[in-house]
Image (cartoon, rainbow, N blue to C red; front, side):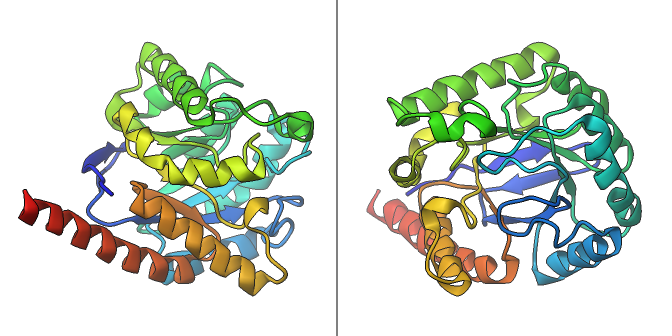
Length: 288
């Protein structure tokens, strides 16, 4: 168990990562996301939900207007913006926490950053739209590079991923290189192994078990396992408990940020996991 301290550079602030786990709350303004599609499609409901997530203890808010659930189809930038812009306009200046936009499209990121977002969470790891990195540079924004294998519409046809962590690390390093070539500073980047993004059920557990290997990238690590299909249980309550287990495992293996739907519950799980992690590090220092 170990977790390095990092300083994540955004346009208007620098966030320390590693002293405690940060919670990124999920706000889907989509009709078809896998767990809450349509629930916050209305801008007024989305605005109220964003305020609620901050009140529950979210350190960051991730707003997405295009589903990346298995089997989902890509939507045009115009439709993504139609869903996203009213929400971002309502939220501008209303939250103390940074807003992240979950998109791989340069056009969407450009508009979102102009409306006050500070982070681009790219689900494709710069494999879908190479212009996205230039938008990040132009706005001096933070960036999350998420590992995605294939595309959501093809995931069901993919077999098990050979050398799962080796492949993730190589692909993410390639994404980092693309971002650096475009001018993105490493201090602006966070890496996400992409739980569920083209990986088989049993391989998601392996990713969590081997998450410590992500330290080789020398970047902060974010994990988004919340409500993913490999955690599905007989009821929503049981699935939340399963998510809490995955969140705890991620933190103990080095995650700096966890991206979750249920902020209050996962904040409680993260608080205990952080205590365990700090105790372990204190013991190591004493023994050393």
